[in-house]
Length: 185
Image (tube, rainbow, N blue to C red):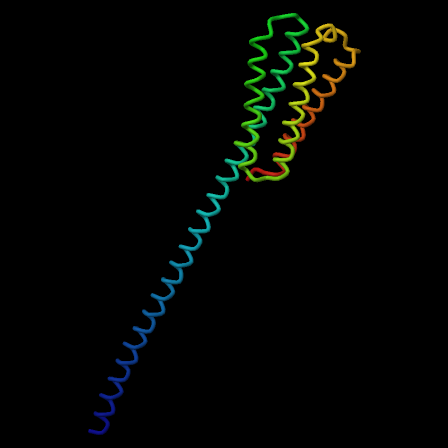
């Protein structure tokens, strides 16, 4: 009977060990699944954060591009005013267009560029605003002295050309700085 009791005990221990091993294995598998689930959740969270960042960067880029378009429209309106002056056309409509364009550039500086919080672009757009204002003063001086419009060698006409070029330089600086300050993804 001693051998019989030993066999029963051995079988019981083997069964217990087998059950305990199965339970321990199941516990480890569940822990591994929880860890994997947590890691996947963290990766999803990082992916969503990256996606939001990319969307924000794209919004900033589009916003600054909108300012660049407004600045280009202001340059076009200035050129149109000069064309009207040269051809002695009515200036009311053209000057109104230029005033609207100037207001759009001013609003665009604050609403499109400053909100993006890119110092380099803010500085360039601020310089473009100042240069636009100076070009407006130069074209107003020509408007008040129409004889200088046709005389491209006059000091007033030369000042206008310099101010226009300065404004175009600011436009070019902004367009070159934009992709460097806010690169595409």
